[in-house]
Image 1: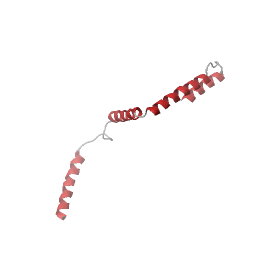
Image 2: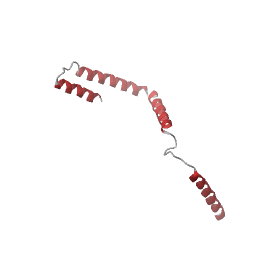
Image 3: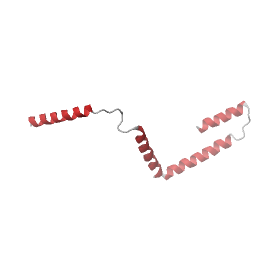
Image 4: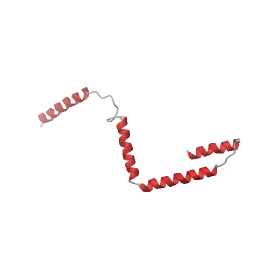
Length: 93
């Protein structure tokens, strides 16, 4: 049994030395572009499979934009009007 354990240790030492000699420049296993493509595809699949979420987001954005648009509609070109327009941009973001 001890000789078998020694044999396993020697085999693993050889495998590790071969693995240590290979050169790997990247920090991750896949390049960034491949990761981005995979994550984007997975995210769109998730959104496609939950249409209620997308519908709610769409309605929320439409109602919020109408509310902000009509709240600050026809602002004058004074300092207060500029401040209100700037607040509308901040509110939108």
